[in-house]
Length: 131
Image 1 (spheres, rainbow, N blue to C red):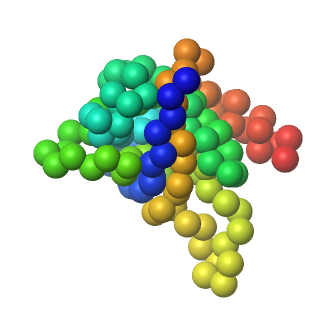
Image 2 (cartoon, rainbow, N blue to C red):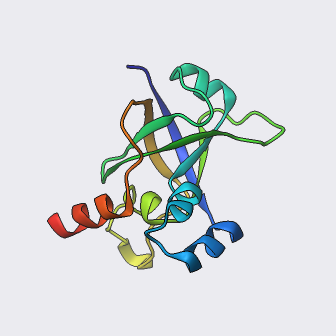
């Protein structure tokens, strides 16, 4: 299965914040949080389409999220965007170094198409408890 290497930048989303008020375990929160925005060329490389699931792997974790076609006018191969959420947090090192702040802006990852379902928040909680 083809993989593409990307650098993920996380961001805050107002709609995600509204969905959080409904509940972090809600389908709406997952739909707005468990996603990755990819460049058209990167999606083509991994043979996936808008709305399909992808697996995102880093040295620190793995998540299955929904791939969305980035709406940016300019192409940005190798650069992906994810909402700051429990899903993107699974991909970040716990080592904060001297800054004492996790690195959420330059997450190096590999993305591949998958037929797995999007991870639920319960799946993520289970993984955290197992560590």
